[in-house]
Length: 113
Image (cartoon, rainbow, N blue to C red; front, side, top):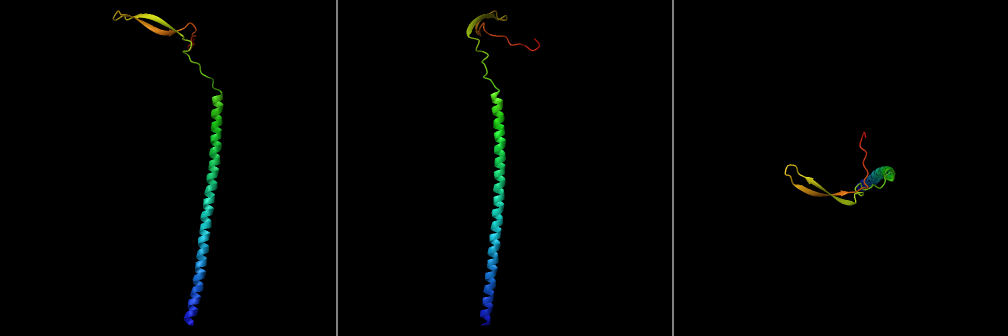
């Protein structure tokens, strides 16, 4: 019986030891879950901050675009084809060049003028 009592006592201690290990494992898992939850919370905050920053940037671009006007084609006034003869002084050859022209063109003011 003495051996049986020792075996029973060892079984009890073994059971208590496993129970403690189970609690340690659960506690470790709880720590991991807590850390994961903290990381998710931090990532959600970063996402909200990035979304707010992006919204501000989009608003800035929209404001800048609202101030733009439709550009005009500077060549749209040239609605005719005119010809001009030029002579090459080196060869003496005269050629006719066909150029866009109009009488509707406006001059571009030059700096200092």
